[in-house]
Image 1 (cartoon, rainbow, N blue to C red):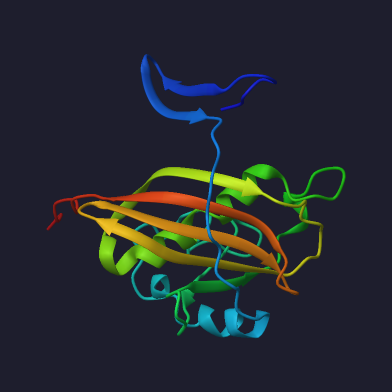
Image 2 (image 1 turned 90 degrees about the horizontal axis):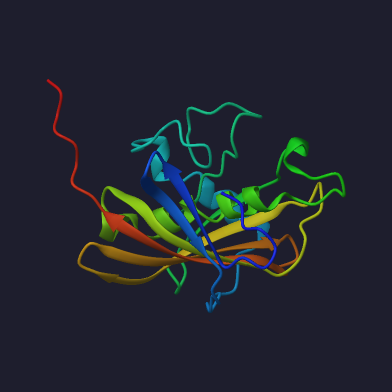
Amino acid sequence: MHLEAGATEAALLHGDAVIASAVVAPVAIDVPAPPTLSLAQAAQARFTGFCQHNFPGCFVCGPERGAGDGLRIFPGRLDDAASQVAACWTPDAGLFDADGHLRPEFVWAALDCPGYFAVQEQAGLAVLGRIGVIRYRDIAHDTPLVVTGWPITSEGRKHVAGTALHDEKGALLAAALSTWITIDAPPRQD
């Protein structure tokens, strides 16, 4: 999906069916203070996806992905007032554009799954319904990042989470507001 210059909407179709849409809209989000790089690194050991993962081949957080095959962001629970999950991530060199900046699609991807793990306890099996991203600064090659996610609200099957990317000094680089939708578990195949 690509928005042409000046366009405010786009749709991704499969035949006549709309499977995704994009709309230019403002995003407002309060971002809690990030943990240190070392606290985010320690949180990764508590990533629940290592024990049980709904989509183990996920490009962002799938533990079945090897080095260089996916982002391998594994956010684990912090013990903080904002109920954040956190991980460390140094993007692979192949994810950057010719100017040495992390390509936007990978910024968006990195801000996706940490939102699920922030609301996992309330949401159960859930899929992304909506995400809005704010990019504050370009992300340069070889920048270790702290990736965070935190729950905002839950109502019925709808769960709202925030996510953010900070550099190792705590500067906010990008943030997202996402809505996760609880889905029914597929029937067991015995």
